[in-house]
Picture 1 (cartoon, rainbow, N blue to C red):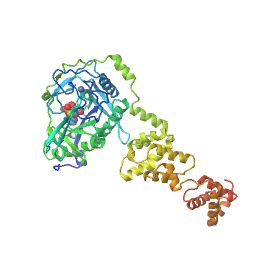
Picture 2: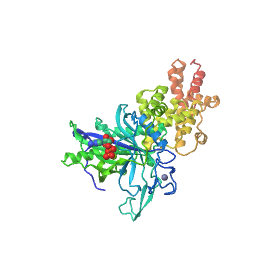
Picture 3: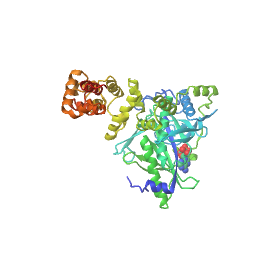
Picture 4: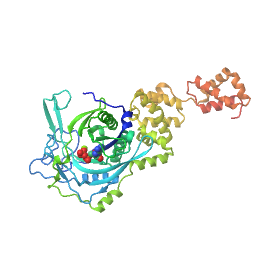
Length: 502
Ligand code: ADP
Ligand code: MG
Ligand code: ZN
């Protein structure tokens, strides 16, 4: 890989203003493809889910998938877009081996949805509005597999294999208007936008939007202009970025790269670029085609899409609760402050906490364990909270043991430690490590007597009416019982034995 000159991020932002455009492709979860009845199921043998239409054989005729159109309208409505009264598909003409028709059926100047926005919340709670230019329907291409080389890329491969199972799977492409005014936060805005969009798509139930499986991928367009200039600079387009973290890194890298080129008097080429996970860099792809190179024209084999207004209104009325509204409702239900909710979201803890509550824990306890002990563990081991090897059911069981008085917090932490260390279910860890709260008076009484004998001066103070001093004796009992005593009962016994009223 060639080393790219970069300006420091701070220096870049001191002289330039970033403008971004995000294009997100979402693979819809329809049962069949966009223009034929072939299955969209993943994992089938290569080329087993194809037909004359998605293979582009002469004479084959496409038919529009109604669920695909419905999903597109739902996405458009959820993004506050206008829905076209009438629109057509268009042919985007180019040759590529994974696209046997030699054109992609897409939409060009007549998208199904246009002119919307999505409000996204940044890590400090600030809300940034991203304007949406359009959301249009198209189809995915097949997949090429380059064999025989070291990298899996075409360079150095001895031959290539083609799998057309993915050809024709419905895609929705969502394109933002140029995002201005984010300044140094542009990479964060990009990440927050894609994250919010993914939540929205999942809430609509139109796709699982798993980025790691390529069901959702993002092209990051970025340009810089000198501070104070209105006219946009030349953009680069980093293709197929497929994780939230990578979206942020790609934007950051491009800001630093553009700044280095521009500040040394160079010019930015309008080109596509590849993103590299290993080091967060981008490298040059191809010089960008202009739209006219594709010779777009309206698709003659498909009827126009003219969704009835009643249908659109029906879909609008049937939209599920949107993620932002849902989060607000949950926060109000818990009665927690904005910054607390924001930490829950930043930690990726919301769904884990909800699942723990579903398993019977109360909300405060579920939040406490995930945001305390478990978040710390995730931090220390450098993993995501969701990857920490404990389930919501197990956390709920620990919380139940605490609520029943069988564990105190200190013991509960040890139980969690045991579960994380692979010692089994919470109850097994309790048994194996002998971690029950001792509350039976026989065992506790002996420890209390011992503590009084060891701390005669403290005992006298308590006898003399200084109840605050009881803490020291309770601490001593805790030590004697290795933290397993029921603190409340110990206090009662101490006062009882010293003849003092609590
Ligand atoms: P293409 O298909 O050529 O990539 P699109 O219009 O589909 O073009 O997408 C370009 C994206 O980049 C849009 O989100 C648009 O708002 C954004 N964009 C356009 N010009 C610039 C620019 N100079 N700098 C940054 N983003 C830009
Ligand atoms: Mg593009
Ligand atoms: Zn087919």
